[in-house]
Length: 115
Image (cartoon, rainbow, N blue to C red; front, side):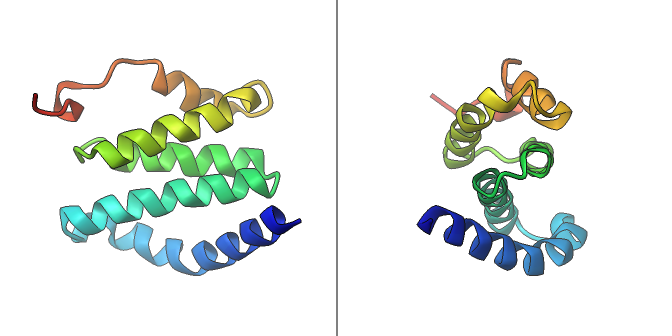
């Protein structure tokens, strides 16, 4: 029951914040862009906990699209974790299936971290 309450609170918070941030996403610095991607991943997680599988897949896909130019171990770890959570639902949602398929592609050279 607590998870459902947390998911609803997260949806409420992100429902108020995300539309404005998506419009201004490209106008912010790298740190803010990274935080917005992390917020988008949190939204995907909250949606999944609320049982909104399609919306969770869309949020995760948006996060991946926005993160392509950002090199961040934290983002990579969160995307990997979200992939593990969403993977069992890949047959239930085209967006989730696309997100999971995208994660099986090796990272581009811009996403590799220096040794």
